[in-house]
Image 1 (cartoon, rainbow, N blue to C red):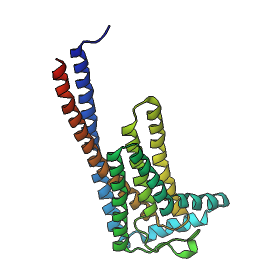
Image 2 (image 1 turned 180 degrees about the vertical axis):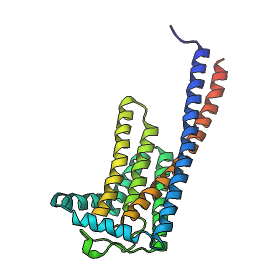
Image 3 (image 1 turned 60 degrees about the vertical axis):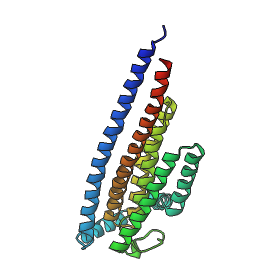
Image 4 (image 1 turned 90 degrees about the vertical axis):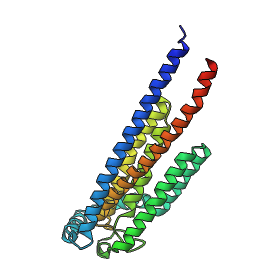
Length: 251
């Protein structure tokens, strides 16, 4: 038996209210997460800048170097390279191109803004703190510059993968798409984690460099997510206003 027009309207209203609740709840959570990790980043910075963490970082680097093995000596530099600037930039451009091709303009702008903002913030702190990397004798491979705080690999990949997971999750409509989104959510956690750990293993970064990179990345992602869901709320409100006159005309 077909549903009455009134039932359909009530069903649409119920879905809209549920969607609005999810959006507002996500924005509140994003604001809280951004604040917490921003404070954590500031605390780490406040300890690193005057050199308070120097002995802690050095002891971990020496311990890692002392326990290196052949397998990880091959894998860690590879993972570190995957998280490097060239590959991250190329992958980011591909993702932006796909979003533009699918005409997901809001998502493309949000991803571009997140990535560009991250690069600006990381570069600013690297120049401000001007912390030297671990001694060259500990390195596996070479590095492009000597400024180590915060870890760009850790921050950049946190922003890239977390934002991709969030964007894909909001675009998923079918069960298959949602399954892919869940898989991407797992990958979004593992990629920055292993890339950050690889930077410690190859001794291109101190441990607190990586911790600060993760913290900064999460804080920035949460802030951008707060903006993103605010824009989604506006789009949904505009769509609802557009649908309202159509319902009146049918009556």
